[in-house]
Amino acid sequence: MTEIIDTVDYVGGRTRLYGIVGHPIEQVRSPEMFTAEFRKREHDAILVPLHVLPDDFEATLPALMRLHNLDGLVFTIPYKVRACALAAELGAQARRVGAINALARGGDGRWRGEIFDGLGCVEAFRRRGIPLAGKRITLIGAGGAGAAVGVAIAGQGPRSMRVHDLDRSRAEALAARIRAVDPAIEVAVGPPSVEEADVLLNVSPVGMLGDARLPVDVAALPSRLVVFDAVVKPDRTPLIELATACGCPAVMGREMMRGQVSRMVDYFLAGGDLAG
Amino acid sequence: MTEIIDTVDYVGGRTRLYGIVGHPIEQVRSPEMFTAEFRKREHDAILVPLHVLPDDFEATLPALMRLHNLDGLVFTIPYKVRACALAAELGAQARRVGAINALARGGDGRWRGEIFDGLGCVEAFRRRGIPLAGKRITLIGAGGAGAAVGVAIAGQGPRSMRVHDLDRSRAEALAARIRAVDPAIEVAVGPPSVEEADVLLNVSPVGMLGDARLPVDVAALPSRLVVFDAVVKPDRTPLIELATACGCPAVMGREMMRGQVSRMVDYFLAGGDLAG
Image 1 (tube, chains in turn cyan, purple):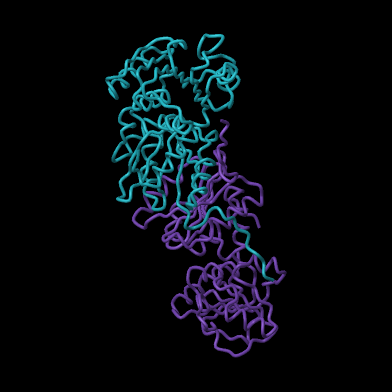
Image 2 (cartoon, helix red, strand yellow; image 1 turned 120 degrees about the vertical axis):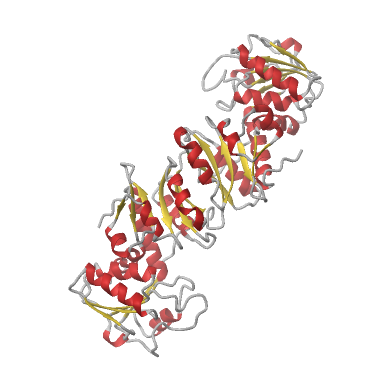
């Protein structure tokens, strides 16, 4: 007679809502990662996938943002640039990159946007205790993520930055953005040279999903070179394997991803206030 | 070096989305109940609270319904009547009651609406093996939920239905709806009489949340009377306690709620096709 009503413990009427907006949406990893981070911090919130079609973006987003229990949105492909228009205020990284991947509702009801792709990379280096100030950086890849990483690294006071992209105009555009962040950085555009670098950053898709290529044309790496690869699938790319074999410190894509999730949850819970 | 990225297993990029729309929203139980029911059926879906303010309803809902991974919505106070306008097709119960609490996206992209408050009650009786056909029914409460229960019970072929509400005009209006469902039912309006009934249904708020009153003015109940109480908080209302003490079969509010969740998930997974 006393039937039990089955329930789950991870979503209820008081749960605060977050979403990731993208097209397509099936491949995103944010729902499981952000929700785990909220849970770890004992904040009753969930991040769900929101599949918005390109033609619907401008009409749907303002309506979603009026949901009274929605506190933040994450943006992925192809919306990081278009999403800027939704923010009442843009953070320093977003203004430099011209894109956002996070939109947070402030305590005053204003929506603030920022991009964390690059800050996540910086956070990964910070957690590993590897300084970037005064270093010679070589960056491969100047697309959306590459630009965000380049701008964020530039904010750490490196001595020089060399930018390479198969599309030279993209590399030139990023070089200009880096100079705007800090005119003291020596900026160059051209193919990477591992001999003249302290830190090698791959933010190109080379090495992703069974691609056996290296983003640099070398057989070995100097062991003092710090190697970072933004690729997360697979976890150990050909570049990371070579770095490990050569005794180089290697920073992996998932460390950047974790750093990014952590910084973004800080941002969301502070209502779009970016400390540090 | 190989940091693990924490994740949860209950939401991801492929998770299908459902929502409950209401104002206020904190008190709703649908998120934990529906999500548990989806999980039990091994369907990767989650139902989240969507707090929509009354002034935003007409602008926000059509935009929400364009989310490509949203398959259905549940409506609660104060939106069950307004939500009818969102449906391209209304089910039989919804047309009779003039309200919906479920909106399902069909395989053809059309949205179908239906109300399950009453069907959940019928389902609770069915699961307990208690027939309603040919019975003399007394129904207390002719508000939104009472109307839905009255209309659904009327569809089961009872011999007679007596409807009582403190607001006599609401009772008269429900009596007319019951006659429209099945003209063969003897319908009356007036105070309940437990002696002349086989089934007593309380769908009024009497007995809720510490209210010590009974919805009928009696000291005892005939043991052959089947007693149903829609109240879920508390689980055992004064009416259910009296029924148990008198040896009456008692059907509880949470049985109706469970029947309703089950029927609604059937409806959602069938894209708004209501079998049975």
